[in-house]
Image (tube, rainbow, N blue to C red; front, top):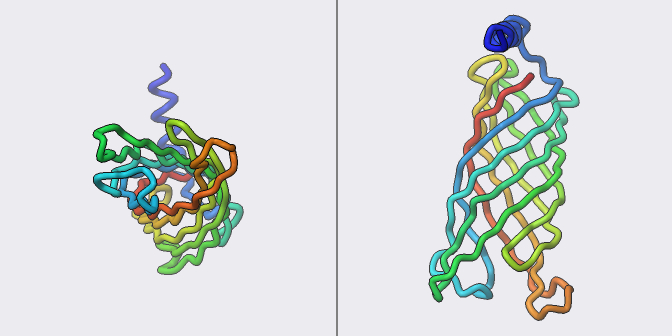
Length: 175
């Protein structure tokens, strides 16, 4: 019986079509490049990542989003692993074009960065392009620039700043 309700829900979603307002969910996969100023002693400064996000379009030009990026694992020269994860809240400004089938956007926000031994504040700035291939579904290509600090001497003060470049593709569904 639940399957029937789920199929009816999907049918109604397609029937009524999406406007540029309301909630959305997305998942993505991509790659990172870490500029750690050789603090961690990494063999490679690149790592794959996965991203998941949820947000809401306020109107066609503004949205608010919570984004999680994880699965980043860098191998150290000592053969140990250094892991990172980010959680942020950001605001996005959109410019739709091609009869609202595509848009470019910029974003900015703040959140937290977590490593195996540390956590701290991260700032995110980014840009991207989205293409709606159906009324409710879009494909996005996103670039994020993350800026964060790391405590290198154990005094709980973030005394070394690092940057990470993230590029990922995502599939988004709007409700």
